[in-house]
Length: 239
Ligand SMILES: C[S@@+](CC[C@H](N)C(=O)[O-])C[C@H]1O[C@@H](n2cnc3c(N)ncnc32)[C@H](O)[C@@H]1O
Image (cartoon, rainbow, N blue to C red; front, side, top):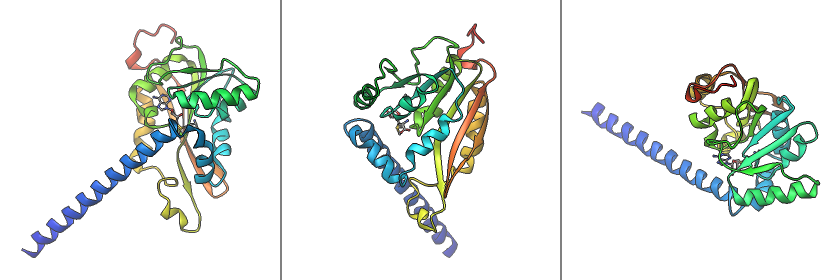
């Protein structure tokens, strides 16, 4: 009897926790969406605040993994990495948010750069097969691990080309304080560690996880080398 009551309490606690997590996840998703749209003007400030000023450095860690000359940046946001990348590579960026496009447009114009960006979604890339050497995404939203996105990345990359996904997670050692900000600093779930490279594998990539250090932070990245055509884009004759 007592055991049954205890297990009822346990299962209620578990479902309350799951409900809370789902609710928090939805609020977080909603807040991110606002940041990509009407609050795009505040994005850089928020990113700098939550990363204790390291966001730019973490983006550059991903850029350092790119191989040129042709680099496509997915979800370029405010365009900061397009500016940096264009010093070394032929950069082009894609982002669906008109507000981010405006912010990035202003930044690019201030650096005398034009024509580096298109509007669109990673799930349907407006680029020819095999025309990129690297596809890069930093701090991407959930779209990045969708099968349609990965198939498109495989399609536009040359054989041996590279997919670099930077900032999928950031873990930190801040003397215990990191426990209070798990939204921004947390190790990836163990399931993700195994599942994400496998998901890239299905799309035709040989993928590995790397976690370079930046002081007290470790920035989680997945790097995939394109080995073959994704099963979703069978018939790609450029493979
Ligand atoms: C968290 S921001 C990252 C911006 C920038 N890469 C950075 O490092 O700060 C995510 C960006 O992905 C864009 N995005 C959302 N859905 C997308 C999709 N399906 N395809 C490409 N970009 C997308 C958003 O508009 C936003 O600019």
